[in-house]
Amino acid sequence: MSTLPHCPLCESTYTYEDRNLYVCPECAHEWPQGEVIDTADKAAPVTDANGNVLEEGDTVSVIKDLKVKGSSLVVKVGTRVKNIRLVAGDHDIDCKIDGIGAMKLKSQFVKKV
Image: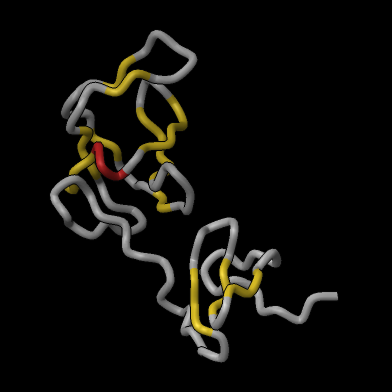
């Protein structure tokens, strides 16, 4: 049974020691042994293409034509998306677009309205 601490960023249990550091093989985070890391602010704020901070319920506008995966539909430039939800993962925004349905968007392709 390993007594090594979990990774403070991704909570992985597969940490290992490397000289005087702990290393996480899943997220490649390294931290000194014996250091207490504050994980309260580990998530960076989600920002749009212009650097504005996005919040739950904001309205955003699409800045680039986006093809809908698995369909011949396209989300056109200027499409407004109301009442966004912020999520963790490779896509930052869950939303519902009129005429298309539920979508996941990356924040780099939208701007705050």
